[in-house]
Amino acid sequence: MRGKFITIEGCDGSGKSTQLKMLEACLIERKIDFVFTREPGGTPLSERIRELILDTSYGDTDKYTELLLYEAARRQHVVKIAKWLDEGKLVVCDRFTDSTLAYQGYGRGVDVESIELCNKIALGGQKIDLTIFLDLSPEESFARKGGADFGDRLETEDASFYRRVYEGYKHIAEDTERVVTVDARGSCEQIHDDIMAALVERGIL
Ligand code: TMP
Image 1 (tube, rainbow, N blue to C red):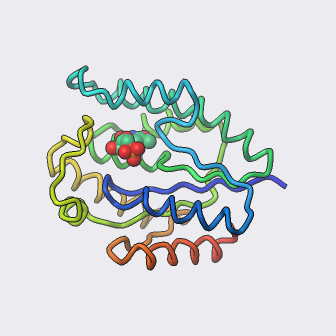
Image 2: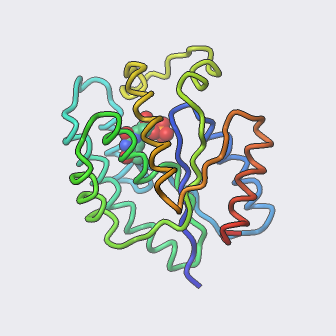
């Protein structure tokens, strides 16, 4: 049987990494055949592209250059994802196409048509079965991190950029049936339980 493909989305600092670790432990315990992967990244070439994108030394990168780099990395990754799905694995991806719409679209102002066209090429018909959106505003996430500076280029953007990205995610979640919004303000355990409940409810587990 073909595997399922799920993605986890949210603003920087929304707690994705913690939740992915908790989910991983659960999947191991349940003896589920899964792969954890991420974007940008997931293949050797895509990880190299990730390094280029997140390298601050290139200064200001044109927003379309950035879009094409993310999508080039994605295309290579999707080929691998399709292979994992053919093998019947549950594929869990940290960020995917909704990140592009939220960050490049809502955040940087790239037009939706360009994003949709690039995603169409990168995906080649590959569908996502379920997306978990960890809903935490940038104000709450920065407060949680005690205002710490994360270092890469995207994380030195101004506050209004993060606000636009967050609003973008909220719109995407409202408009897209595949997306389940999980309130990420609670305890790690509560958020984890909500994610597991969504996976069961949507027939993933
Ligand atoms: P990460 O810190 O969650 O690994 O993600 C790296 C950064 O890449 C994060 O700030 C969001 C950004 N990003 C985009 O801007 N567009 C995309 O399509 C993807 C996948 C990530």
